[in-house]
Image 1: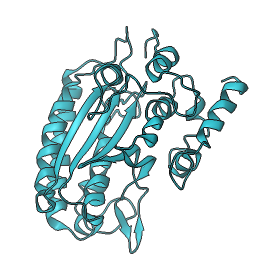
Image 2 (image 1 turned 30 degrees about the vertical axis):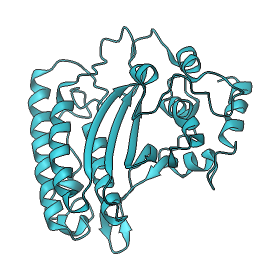
Image 3 (image 1 turned 180 degrees about the horizontal axis):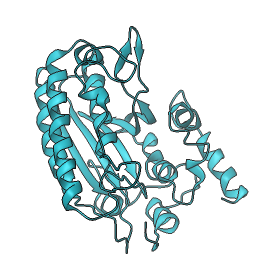
Length: 296
């Protein structure tokens, strides 16, 4: 990236956003080292995410807007957790609590039989191993904050999703998928305990995978076969867990292109202006900066 453009982004990252933390602090707080390399890449989902959503911080209907929202991680000791999952975007809007995973050109190789996954692609044992995992000796109930019913529901969910993964790896020939079931399993855990431990009630909880649909890509599959299965089972599980809190959980997949045209969660993107960029139209900016004819 040219230095002039890089400086422009730094200026926007430290522009006033109505929060007590600049956006640059939020990105630095995340555990993905977003500003070290990822943000400056030609194919950066982090930068797309910043451009696409940062303007929302100025909207009156949006509360608690944040990039790199840190959730709850699996317990691995007394007062100690594994690396917690971070959501790319978080905000509240009326009765809605929205968690966004932003996708641009990421590839998940749960289908791909390369050397790394020659013995199979497995969800983390932290979420289904009953008697500890790796160096952690805690039982699954202890790792789930002493919530045995939730631990059992989540263990069964992981086993069901793992079965689907194993079956599809034998049948489907695509090398890559945009959808990462391992990552989304971590997000589900984090969202469950965020809602429960923060005492959230009477809300609509959304986990949204918002994906930039690249044209002419032979390995981009918006209707990836495992997504509907994951959605169905995740919604069933979380709605059971959230029943006592009177919360409803929805798992969504949206394309950025449709969001720009039709809106998202009742938010109109068509007339939005790019955050801290002198009245530049957001849709034009995204189309000019990110539309690519290249394959993944």
